[in-house]
Structure formats: C-alpha cells, structure tokens
Length: 231
Ligand code: GDP
Image (cartoon, rainbow, N blue to C red; front, side, top):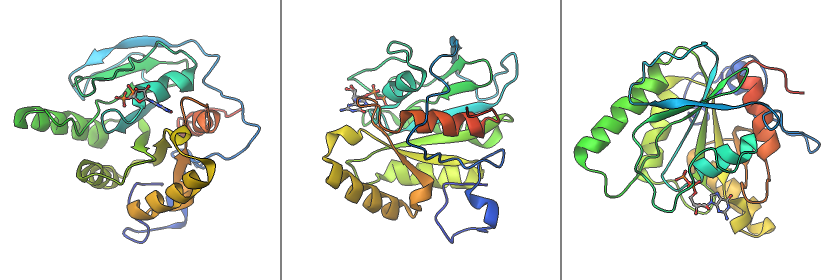
C-alpha cells in the first residue's frame, strides 16, 4: 500500500507503491480523459464530526493541504464545476469536513492547515478532527495531499506527513500551481520537492488547476483508488 512515508523508513514491501485496490495510484498517460468530469455530483453537507455517517456508504477520497494551496480550485477542476468548492483569497476559515457525492465515491474536502491566526484551541480542534478522520474512517480509500510547487515543505506540512504516514492509508502527493513556474523550473522543483519529502517521483503528481495540467491523470488515479473503472 502506498503511504506518505519516506522511502526506506517503513516496511517497504513490493506493494507499497500500489493503490487501495491494487491499481497504481499515479496514473501517467498523455491521452487520459477525465473520468470525473461528466458525472453528476452533489454537495452532501459540511460536518464537524469525523465519525459522521453518510448514505449510501461509498469509498471516500480525501483532500488535504495547507490553506491557500489551491485545494478548492483543484476540486473544482477535477469535477469540471468552477463554482463547486469555494475559492477564496482569505484562507483558513473552515473547520468542517465537506462531502461531495459522485455515483461511485465521495470527495471529502478536509479543512486546510497552517492558518497563521488560528488559536491554540482551534489547532487542537483541527488536529482532533483531521486525525480522527484520517486514522479512523472506515471507507477512506485514498488521500490526496496538496503542496504548492513553489514552497519548501512547512513545519505543518511535515507534521501532516507524519500523520498521513502513521495512518498507513494510500496517499498521493500532488504539487499544485505548476503554471506559476516555467516548464524547466517546474521539472527541477518537482525533483527538489519530492527529495525534500523523501518521496519518489512515482509518488507525486504535478498539477495546475489553471492550465489543466495533470488534472485528468489525477482524476483517473482517484477513480482507480476508489475501486472504479478508469476508462
Ligand atoms: P485553498 O485555500 O487551498 O482552497 O485554495 P484556493 O483554491 O482557494 O486557491 C487559493 C489561491 O490560489 C486563489 O487565489 C486561487 O485562484 C489560486 N490558485 C489555485 N490554484 C491555482 C493554480 O493552479 N494556478 C494558479 N496560478 N493559481 C491558483
């Protein structure tokens, strides 16, 4: 099972690099069409409790990252609905789990971390909610962990990596905002950032919600991790 743990830090068996259902979590195929784009999608609700039950029970794919990393934009791009998740210039307000239902899976938008003005009790509440969800959620099939391609991993990113690795869930590290760099700078940054995180290049996906780079591939990886067909 793929985890966010560093190479060589765990029991790196052969299937460490496989997704939840035995399919590779990173999908690379330049002709990929987006399997999430043309599907009906419904906002289920916002919940403060990691144990919330949703009906029908379906595999869940969660999205997590630092505030302002581009999570809402990525969700909107994945499903082809510009207004679905709120895109905001003033990050960090939500402390709720937002569930979106597709026919075969839920996309679960976890609150962003690293909001500078959060109080101590906000942070404790955040940790309880997110770690409760990531560790305990029965149908969690994969976690998409977002990092801004331009920035070195923050202390909060490191803490999140620890939490994700400890959860032993399938995790895909997704680098966002690729359009902010030139093509050659981007390739160098992908290598640097993957190395800084101790991840292999087959454990990361490069995306831009603005240009659409990597979005169809990510949608395909998500569908596969949730156990669905990819074409
Ligand atoms: P969230 O706080 O993680 O949900 O991030 P948002 O999706 O609200 O995005 C934060 C800011 O980054 C907004 O100003 C977005 O327009 C911008 N942004 C998000 N994704 C991209 C991207 O792929 N490229 C560029 N250039 N900007 C982006």
